[in-house]
Image (tube, rainbow, N blue to C red; front, side, top):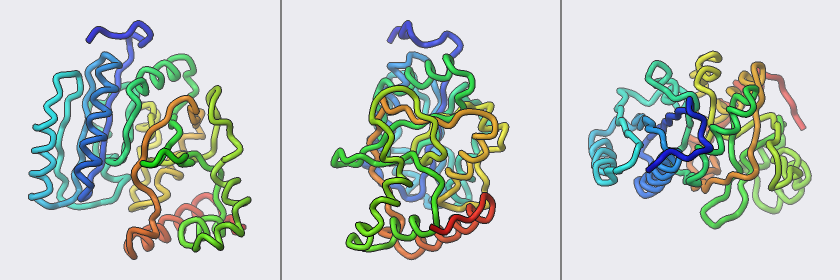
Length: 279
């Protein structure tokens, strides 16, 4: 496929997906969408599959999936099995010393990208050197808006949003809407935001390396918020409302007690580092 005219000549991209017994159907959809976006972008790109499942059978299934996809385009998939599950951030940090593009995608294994995403992201970063990390809007599997950009959270809002029944959440609807930046327009120009979800981030590789990637003391949850707080010290953290992904994940409280524990530990570390806000 010829390279689109609106892609900067010096542009290059890479991507990483961290796995831990991740759903293979969702992973197939993710990899297929990344492959399409790379082919439309027109520049070859490595994608690192970082498997922290520590399960040989699952690893075989992932490798079989990659072999089955066998894209004829420009995406090169690299499967990497790690010896232990060190957490989401640590998994993504494991590629810091690998060949990365000018722009690096940090992805969950349960997102689907629009095929124009890479073109638009690379053009945005070429036009504005101050943009260091960008995220699109999100929608769930049913097409309902997911609010991936956030204001700085309070303990009360996080607890209500994650664990409260629906009737109690309605009591705090105004506070939750404020936290989820629901007042932002769903179209228009780039929007500077405080925080972004780590399910889909496009970050300048040199900026990602400059802040030494994720803080690996976060195992799961809040490592994305911490990363945004540190990246804000060197550039713009933005949402592009003209781009939208499909995200099939979310809701820590519905995933069992381990996720609740990781959520609580992550929140404790985040507030301890950046300041407590109770209500």
